Image (cartoon, rainbow, N blue to C red; front, side, top):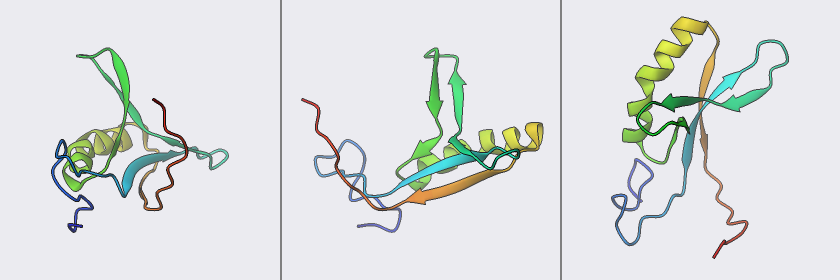
Length: 90
């Protein structure tokens, strides 16, 4: 595995997500957490600010920095590194 957590480039036959990074917002009133998302005007959908590699996380950083400046609410970058395949949908 490479230092960025990828076994190969996305789309390659052996690409497997082993770690996932997510930007987590913290509610100051009760310390509950939620994954930060943004609205993509091009697609019309909210997209979670998560990634399996450094490049994806870095691409989200400007949005997070602007969000923190605007809202003055803290945001954590967390890494989930224990993978458990729970169910396979076919």
